[in-house]
Length: 260
Image (cartoon, rainbow, N blue to C red; front, side, top):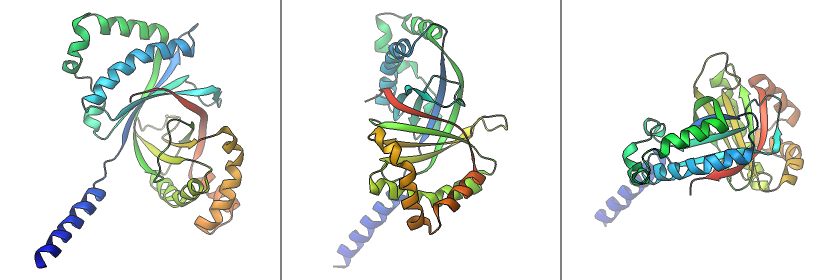
């Protein structure tokens, strides 16, 4: 019996240890601008070729996923100066930016100049305005659903610690919205680099909706969830939110391409 209790205790210790060591998600975000005369279809055609390379990287354990987000019907605010974004996601920041050439050996046997040709075609289609290294700092238990409509909200925050503490409390609100069926998931990311004062946004959130009509229910869902989750009126919450961060841009997106 004593041995049985020991085994049970070890099993609990292992399981809770695994839970506590849940990996952090990092993302390298590239902000793309189409070249004059090029369309989103042109960009998707190019990114399809890159997607094959990213699939090899995923299969090799270099990344966890790669995703191309495009504004749905061009819906983005004036604060958005790019046309689409691509994201390399993973748990190992030291691997995330790498392209180990040995894993592409089979792909280059037939044509050793394949990468040079792809790079040239890419440059003629789009340019990367900038890149950022980001880290997921919080989110609902149910993550954002990549098959749905996703809203990116970009924020400029002066006091990161205060803002994150605020969002930690607001997580209860988003969990309630998930439970009510308004959103499918919500995540908060912070920019690790660049972190200079001149960046237009240093935090962003993503929330997913299964239907566009859920956008019309958004404010009502907040009004119902905030008093129950936080014990304050929705109006008071909105006042606190505007003090903690400044929204600099928003866009409604769908996933055009992604690794499997």
